[in-house]
Length: 440
Image 1 (cartoon, rainbow, N blue to C red):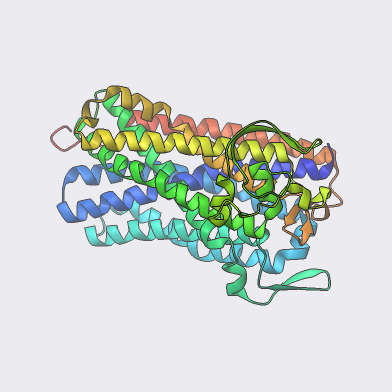
Image 2 (cartoon, rainbow, N blue to C red; image 1 turned 120 degrees about the horizontal axis):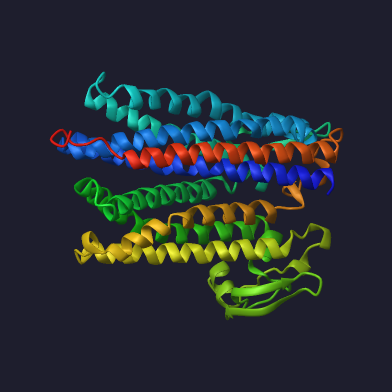
């Protein structure tokens, strides 16, 4: 392997592993805010116990997110030095703002959630929960804005071989920021929903914390029935945005090689980029044209409309995207089934469904990881779409052998961190929420 490919693998592995934790953070902060709001309104002690348990879990997830995210910024100066020189004046701004504002806000008020329950009033504690929620989502916004700029660059000019920021708002709110931010936030909320539902299911199956678990499960299922459907709408809007601004990626995602009207929406197929055909296709006639332009006559651009050296790896992009969509529909089914059980007042006794929730926990994680794979690999061969190729952005002085060695060490380090995290998380789950006063 050459240095560029190894650098891509290393950064992709680092980002993919790291994002497990910010996505969980987004979801957990939502549920902490919900139960703190319920406690502030009802003063029911069970809501406080749920929140306190989720705060402890959030603290562990937050620490892992910080530890695994620290290596990413070093990569820009080591493996991607030419990228940093070319775009540091644009890309570095939202990253710096994220650290100064959002990360600091989240970290400070998380301390109050951990240690201030008996030291501040319930109102101040609620505001702390809100500011942790706000800080986590503000952090997500700045990171997504920086990444979105790489997909749809705006608000800059090229001067002296470098990108120079000319309009901060245009760069931040570039054409893909808002829809990608909403799509990412929903993925985080759905991940947190799956986590809390799996926790409730585990305790119910273990005959522990019955009343607390049922309350947690009911709130979780309400969101589980809604969020995947909203995510489906946002996913479609995001796909339309990709078709408008990154048409080559869109063609690879959908497996379209030739520009055509009445383009089918493929549900399955095996792309053959050499022969420019999708093998064993299974699709719905004309539906892709309808989704893109609300008419079966809408032409959909195929990969053949673009130079061959601007095609992304079609097989990886098509497959990861379609598996992600399939997982999304599985989550829709699980959520709607739970909503039906809740409406029928059968959720509290549906042990078989509790097992579905418990074993379905990996699904949202797999879904958003595959979504990032299709998004980022689909941007290739560009690191900044239409502006700078990935091969032109890597460092020139770091040999492939050193990158391979550091990649191996990084894998070992992250696997060790994962082992520590799982040990601590399972011990926390086994301990469970604090007992009610009458149980203590």
